[in-house]
Image (tube, rainbow, N blue to C red; front, side):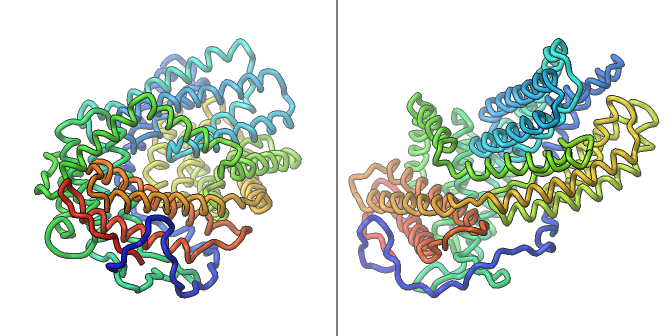
Length: 595
């Protein structure tokens, strides 16, 4: 690290090697490649099965299985929030249930007031766009807006009377309340389970970074691994570790009052952070094997490991307490609401994606209606499911959705005779595919769609048998037309705000780096203030990388400031390393090196 002091502010940008132009990866093989399963795939899978089985069996006993589509809307809420600590999960799931009921209410009222296909499609597209924006703005996580759109779009095309709506909504709210209980039930057994998993991921990512951090010192420029003709600038291990550590801190800050277990988890995150900001194999906290051993014990059911005391840990924990108090205070809650409103405001980068969703869903629905397809809501859901953070990811999702649905109709054709043995067989088939969908979707979206498609088709059987050939033909046509129309809309509606988001993220990173350097070199700065500034810088680097990755996947926009991106990341990582080495109340404050 250089001994030359640098003024806080924008990092100096030396002439970096010219990066070759990025080529958007559209390889079907990469889009369809399977990934390792999520470490928590069984949690949403089991939750949705339990949350659906009880209402289904009650309706089966009452001989009203035709109402299962309304209870299922509430049961599907059990899919959300499994990465959140239980205190935050309780509030988030309550919002999910209410949001599901609100979308369903709009659809049911619309369906009861008009039979115009054109109006129903317009309302379905508008609902899909609103649901997309709200899910992205609140960052509720997977499965995102797709479940909301599936429920509300299907309800639009179901026969409905105004006097039936209160009873149907009551079923949804009742099933949603039960799903809320199912999703929170593990708190009775393992109160800090989500926090332990988040910290274990941070330790594992820090271990990978400590074992192979990549070049980050000296004047070497790390251009990262090549993907085709594109270059991924910067060491991926350091970015992954930064994101995991940031996620662990967010999880702990949202977990509620400190407990002895959470205190130990906070100390472990301090160790992971130290390994991430100053990686490299060796003894101490940066030893990869020790970090992996801590991660394994943290993920398990035994006691949380207690790391050895290191300088600055007590001050960092004091800073965490102060930050938690600020977030839970009235002003902190107001700041969170203001941040949410900014993400929903006129200048939001989410607006182009919302317009894509609105235009694409409407185009898909009207196209299918013009061709005489009886269930255009399938096309609306297909189009809505495509829209990801950028156009490249949307293209990948179009391939995944199309392949998964086409294979799924073959599975439906094979299982349909079994489901028609009796109502109990139909319920069991739906539960099986609900579990299979969540078990497989983390491997790749197309694999999960193979199970989702027969489940969605079997739901129609709750109201009575339908001709198999008609169901299969409509589903294939809706899938192809919905994917084509949805992706066409995505290419026509450009997202030029993605580059603007990068510029804002760069400015925020520069400010966070300047603040971290200022507090790191100020002997009078409180330790809590230094640690808070370092966490703010980590969060800004995570946001910068997310903004850069999103913008890199957009096709029609101005060139990205790739050299400034690379310089900002390198400077930020250097500042993190320098400030981490100066933690503690008695740390000296030599000048922080720069590029």
